[in-house]
Length: 171
Length: 78
Image (cartoon, rainbow over all chains, first blue to last red; front, side, top):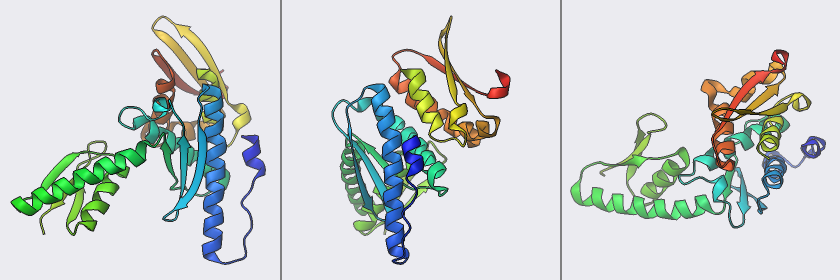
């Protein structure tokens, strides 16, 4: 943690876009320190990959046997992402939208959700009725909205967390 | 290991990381981890509607093989 404190954001004079990327890279570095510390203490093997995607820092802990840090429904992953964002906020003074993935959990869940969205779109197209999906996390709902939009239909979220869910709407 | 993990997670988000101390106590109903933080950081570790406290409990609960209770107290209550 003390290491993270010495690494302040690199000053950048190349304009807004360049500064954004270097800020996001700094977010990734702070997140990596925080997570590496946890992996060490918990004696878990994992490597940390850093990336920037769609104006967000993406931090992926990769390795085997990391299910402990995801939980069966991703609830541990969401909690860890929340804490990691707070660790970044403490270091940078800025709210972070960084995305954390552990053991490819989000990547796999994403492809399952895209299939689910495609099925729902087909159902709605054939029945002409709105189709409600089960309760999902904000990440999961975003994947569904994006996939439904890509298939040419609209969707909206209804209900209250943690029971918020997506409804796919007929054209 | 749990107390150390919790101390790391808490110290990483507060303004006064050096004041963070986690004490493990064995209680009749299981383990208790008592998190002591600087008074100014208590709100931060609990979070709005207890959201941050819940996140700590979820992560530590996942690392534990039995039931663990976590209490947050400020250092003045030592």
